[in-house]
Every structure is written in structure tokens, then in C-alpha cells.
Amino acid sequence: MLLWKKVLGPVALVGVSVFGLSTHSYAAMISSQSDVEILALDGLKVNRENVDGQKSLKVQEGRHQVVIRYYGDVRKGQRDVVYSTAPDVFTIDVKPNDSIKILAPHLTSYTQAQAYFRRGAEWKVQYQDGTVKSVDYEPLTGNGIMPFNDIERAVAIHNAEQGNEFAPQVQQYVSTPKIASQKINVKKDDDTLIQTIQLLYNNASPAQKQKIKAWIVGQ
Image (cartoon, rainbow, N blue to C red; front, side, top):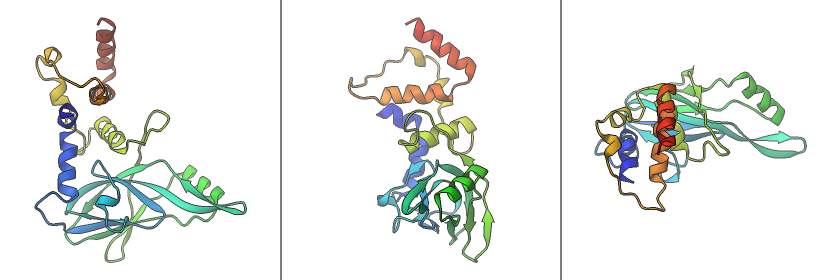
């Protein structure tokens, strides 16, 4: 587990400052309308333990990364169904005492929701003074049957691929001299090492991936 924490250290430190273990006071609030679900903030999963009323996040001033999705009731034929989307990610600058609300598109039917998100959503935020602005966002991509089941890992991979300010600092460990000869004691039933290897591989360049494959074949 220590190696995984070492690789994702910056993300873990963000969690300390965002969700209540920091000595700094919270200066602002990020919230959302009922049909918008905030999945992650600054690389950390959002759940009932770190939100106020499940829709409001107390944050410090500064730049934050928010992962959201649409998750709301719409009409499909004669019944109500839940329409949900894949996550989108964007960054926003928060000033002291800001109160920022992520707005949901007004959708009433399943076909309307399909058409709207097929065209590409326009996510907007409303500031405390009533000003409404659109935000630039990117879709959060994932692989596998349940790519966003581990939202923190999906965000970490996205940030590493983008090389943005929220990216986990993994390169310094990849390039550390003699790392290939280091011995790591890991419990047999602990898949932390596998997760770490997967993260490092996904963050590697195509040339580096070929070298990794060649090394594995030779073992």
C-alpha cells in the first residue's frame, strides 16, 4: 500500500487539504443542482462523508478540478427513468467566499436527453452574484467494463495523460536510478502492486510501453 501512496502522493495530499484534515479554513463553496452529480474534486471521490447535504463542497480559494455527470429523472414513454452520462471534467478558479453552483440542463424526456448529450453538453456555473458562465470541459475517458467504478484512478490516469497541474507525480519514480533492482515486499493477496504497474504503464509513452512489454517477455 505504501508504494501506491507514494505514486499517488500529490493526489492524496490534495485530499488532506480539501476534505477536512487541513488546518486551513474553508473559504468557498462548490455545489450543484439536483440533476448534476459531483463525482470527484481535485482527484478525490466525493461521497456523503465529505459533502454538506450531498450537494455542496466546502473548498479553499484557488484552482480546483471538478468531475461531474448528469444523473436525473426523465420521461421514457409512460414511465420515469434515470438518465445518466459518462463523466466530464473541468477546472474552475474559486475566489475567497465564492459560492459556485453547477447548473443542470433542463431535460424532460429520454430522447431529448440523448439528443442533447449527443450534440455535446454545455455545462454552466452560476456565481454568487448571479453571473452565469459556460465552462470548458473534457470527457473523462476510461477502459474496461466499468471504467469509472474507481473514479480516483480514472481521474489520475486522465491527469497523467494530460500532464496538467493535477497530474500525479509518477515520472520521478519511473526514472529513479536502480529502481528495477529494488525489492518490494507485497502480500500475495494485495493487488496494490498490480494497480501501480497498470498506472505506470498507462502513463508511459508508446516507446516506453514497447520496452516494458519486451522486458516482461524476457522474464
